[in-house]
Image: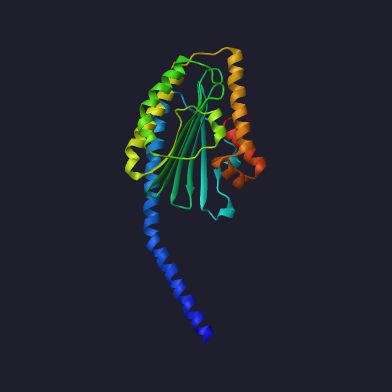
Length: 269
């Protein structure tokens, strides 16, 4: 009798699980399509702006880092990496990230040439169904005063009041030693998709305008810029963060360090 009860209980539980899966599938498919659409929107806009302004050239990524698709995650996570460069832009790296099939992430980082007093631009946008995690960081470790940079920072601050209305995401305290107060760390939902895209357009165009206006720095300032970014990356690897921790899980500590330094920031070839 007891075995019979267990049998029916198991079948009932199995039925509930199957029903839950059947109910969830349409929502997961919809979330993936929505994520793919938003990814394509950001990627297309960014590529158009870069190609129109700069002579972009592919930069070779080590074969083992082009596609990160670890077997232990049973194909639930995939990172496709691409890297380019141009005059004044030492690296323009982008990631096409899919997590758990339905979560989509757009990541792009511009690391400029040390010959110009320019900060790093880093963006991470995560689309999870109707949820949005939205990060734009202007990383300026050397903090060399420059009217050209200040003009860019002033332009993007026109969104400051609107950004302040969103839910602010927690940021590790040490980051504030390196990022500017124009950086954004917020979370929201799909109702704000249009304003989020407009904010990104302002940041990207203001940054690229700044790059085009930039003038050559002295050798001493160039060393300051290089040493500043080196300190930032060293601190990032030492203290960790959401993105770098994921790569540590994927690749292990040694390859994580190699990936962050050679691919993400292009500090070493």
